[in-house]
Image 1 (cartoon, rainbow, N blue to C red):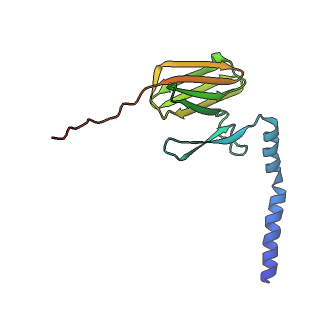
Image 2: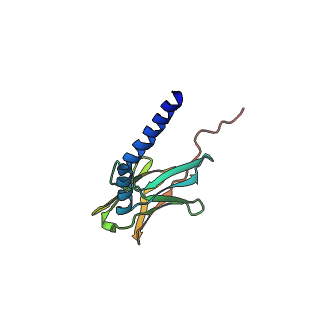
Image 3: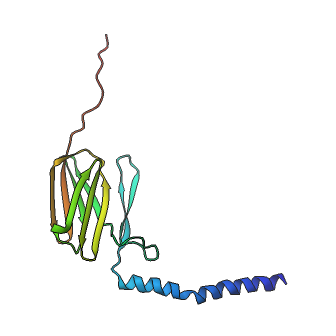
Length: 160
């Protein structure tokens, strides 16, 4: 009796999966008809801990937006006192790209036809907003900032 009940449950679970296969084929059909790139990047943060970022198109089946998050790499040149953000955004023109600095974040967005990109990058260093230079060629956006030197906070106290 117990054995028959277990077999019935197993058969029901397998047959449900078989009869609902159309849902899986719809997801696969979407994945092969739309441009798709998705991944993770990992860099070491200032505090020595890894910083993991997700980039690319939304994962099929979890689609919440038609906006892609571009892959952005951060390059710091302390000897040259510069910070460079390099973003991969193929398929847009430079007139479609908007870069803004708001507080401790750099915001990058672009829209050209069906291609839409948007991301917000936390700035770990203080930057001079007036020194910003940006170039775009072959799908690669480079935004350069001059770093503002951090003066040590506090006051030296003389001992009597």
